[in-house]
Length: 233
Ligand code: DX5
Ligand code: ZN
Image 1 (cartoon, rainbow, N blue to C red):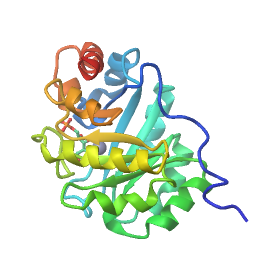
Image 2: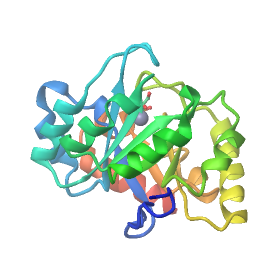
Image 3: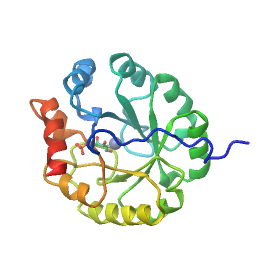
Image 4: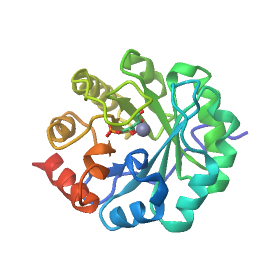
């Protein structure tokens, strides 16, 4: 029988200088998505895809068919953030569409089974934690998942203000990751930009989702480069 450990991803997530810039496509022009991807293609590390079901969060966005279209336009790592009550019903569809990773929320429960389902499909596994959920609740899964996504806004919409508490939460998570000697990646999502990315990097975050700070600028490619430099400053 396959255990989680046996089917654990062997691909290290860290690339290049150890900073992963993941533009959130939610803030791009939905009428012109192939062009939006083209602007960041040579500058971003991942593409972050926000999937909202109108139930877990009060907003409705995109699903597997759109991920399939992204896959037709880019070889980038497609980092799918599933803000859904029943993400497991769609894991296979995302895998078929070309997703590399699915991140689901710890708040919906059934975490162990969902991790196993993703592993069986060969997808990367992410666990997202909302701002009001104790970060300690993710600790028991640290050796089973590839990344923990620390939400620094309440999920549902782009363009919100960064919740400063996220910095301490990343720090606590990183301390626990070190004490367990695991290599779980910390990703931060919501209100991330030039003003806070270095602080997040310093306490252990290595993947940075940014929507408005990238697609809200005249030159999204350049905004990716500036965010990466700012993290390391
Ligand atoms: C929020 C989403 C985020 C969001 C980030 O629910 O998960 O990925 O699009 O957008 P900004 O960077 O504008 O907060
Ligand atoms: Zn997201």
